[in-house]
Length: 120
Image (cartoon, rainbow, N blue to C red; front, side):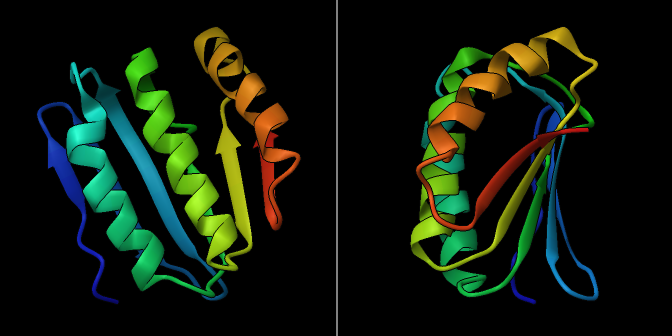
């Protein structure tokens, strides 16, 4: 697998290949003023390299993200859908800020093919 991990300040994305899927785990705090500037190229690369694979995007250990992080997430999930990836998105339903951020995302993703957003 050619996808490299991503780390900026207190935020990182780890990528690991499991038996039947690729796990993309978000960790730490996404606090950049304009996260799209750094996240979009990285996430576009992942969407292209993992085309056709099953993926799990795991936000359950993400400590914080500002509202500016949501558009790159939506763009990435849409790219995964378009690229034919079966995409499972997990968030921590017990963290109030994650529920508030991911419930609208869950609604948006209903219209996307192969995408399931689940509070764990």
